[in-house]
Length: 436
Ligand SMILES: Cc1ncc(COP(=O)(O)O)c(C=O)c1O
Ligand SMILES: N[C@@H](CCCC[NH3+])C(=O)O
Image (cartoon, rainbow, N blue to C red; front, side, top):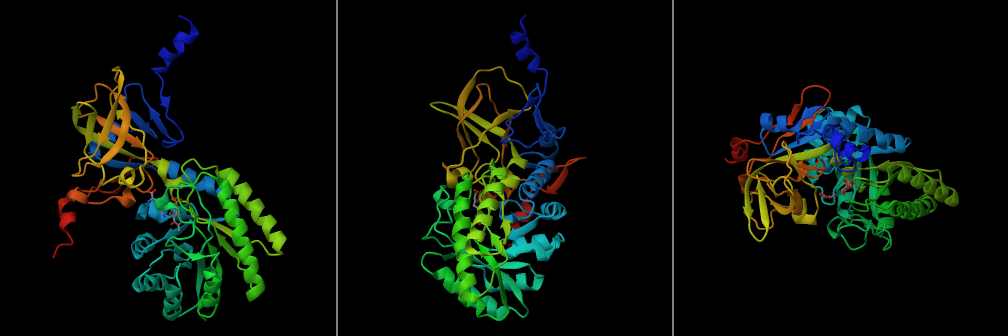
């Protein structure tokens, strides 16, 4: 046998590295078909905790937090809680020295009940009800990001002591992303438009409120952004506006929050260097002291740390092969909402059957409950098999619903020791708990 022939044979006996752009850092595919994360068998987790189940690798979460801190050592990194938040996650983030962006009183309560330092919390939202603003003031959150003239007036009236605030600016920049998540462009619900003068008017309005302390500007261009250049454009636009504010109001705002939106495999180092350089350049040009940068990544920290394990319930073979699993739209609405594409893999057994295209569907009463069209799976896929879908750590648990009264899956965390249940599976009693 030649060496070239030996290598593939030899490979069958070695753990296989999975695509590092999709899978947790510590994921390995074993020759018999199992996958381990940090040495923990996913098949074992499915047996122990049942399916469907979300699994999260805490080592990947921590590594992502550290990658951000290393790429942007002088910046503040505020995790966007909407991507994935629970008390254990809040504790992990606090331990990693991150700040936290919350967008509701619910996220705020989760964070504060986990002991997350309120001074490192920022409250977002385009329509925060007054009870949420009150909750944020009572909790002593570090900053509130103002999004409308009504909100400026309301917060100005509710505050009983000085509150740091940012103004959310819509810079008119297209992040080249899905329409549903493009938030930097004009003519949408978020922020104060820069071009129309609304943002300048917002600055004037905030400064007329004695207890609102304007500490900076914020913008969020959208989500799933891969292009660093759009952030450079945002820096130019906002630095220009900071200069205008300095001239008109005689103040240099100390913070510039560029929001989040980084895609899973974002060029973080490139972003760190380029944004810092452009900011320094622009500030020099305008004779401004450079503000401290804030970034709010959600997906780029959490997505790759998570995966979902399903069990196949039925396989229908006809014009098309439909592989139906025990979850679907309720644990992952993203294919239906954004046409999101996923990879899927057979878990727990090896198959030598030729691969064949299959459509993986969920168990919900909707024809649109399709998890993956044209998935490539072994042709002998059958009821009872396990499937695993990587890259589900962001916007899956947080967007899960109880549609069809399907109970939401647990979140099982893999750290250094025994796997830990961070969130248990919802029970039938949980589903009825709010009924009076
Ligand atoms: C204000 C704000 N910051 C941060 C994020 C985080 O976005 P992503 O998870 O895409 O990084 C979002 C959501 O898009 C957001 O609306
Ligand atoms: N929920 C979206 C992202 C929206 C980001 C929040 N502003 C997703 O699943 O991709």
